[in-house]
Image (tube, rainbow, N blue to C red; front, side):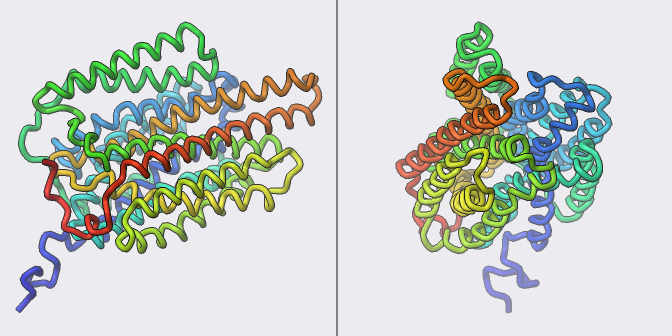
Length: 494
């Protein structure tokens, strides 16, 4: 006679028998999305030559994707909740595959930017559906922690893997394959999803909050675009100030709408919980600090040290290795100690790793000045990603799983977009100041490299400050103990 908590086949009641195969499908899709956030960084120099992209416009290769992705994630989460997460997951995969193929065949820069934006649109459907499927599929806390461990390891290490893959494809094939490689991956994931992913959707009122959609999307777009314009036109330019004012007005209106409408796009109950709200703030600053690290360290390796695309990609391998190793450690420690004892020291360690990068010069060794920093940062971030995913979805009701999942990705993507734009301005200003103070001639290459490296190190200091701020936020906001994580979840929000 089976145990009362198990069915006739021995499966725990409420658990999907194919749940680990489902996790493999989700892992493939998440790896594809994370790879896409970094894989084009290595390919930009080659794409610029091929398509005649100017220095001023090169940012749009990245920004076109992050703008669309970050601005539409909340809507994507709600669509998945209401229409069915499996259905929207498959739609996202098919659309992402098509957009990637278009980008791979781009004949001009406009076509490339458009395809990257289209990738962002379908990614905004895919990402929240993927995380919501994990939350709905794994109902036993111990197994859910392991599933989040896999998801967190991919989220943390995937960006570095993307740099390696991007370097390999750019050097031995073409930069176009940095986009085209997504198409077969998405098709394989789609075929597997048809068999192993089970449908789920929110119950109850499924009407859409159209005013919330408009104000949130436009507000996030204006905010992100404003930071990007600040990087090129300056903080005091009319367009920069106008965009920030528009963003403030639109996001204020969004909050007012969400507090009054019957079925809001982002229910304030999702973020008012101190643990989830703190998790989203933490994710925002982590995205800001980490995305910029990849950008500036990649530029230092290629431009200053003269690394090839492939060598530059492999130079991030210690970061990937550290994430993978310590993600396993974090998933074991989380049920024993709870999230805060992992996340706070993890962010402090990551900020120390970034501060160590401020020691680099055009003459320093990669082994002595870069590798230790990457290992310290990756070990710290692995202790952050897995608990952060868990706390951001803790106690969420089935009706809000998709939008809570979207908030995790939204905060990280918006943080990455804002942080990259902000720190790019910081680095450019520091570089220009170094040129002026040291009276460096335009043809003095050694002086130019010194000025650029100075700009990168100043940006690393700001990145470290962001991560340390994140540690403070999580210290004061997170109060979930280990007992809460081992209790049966899913009671909903009250």
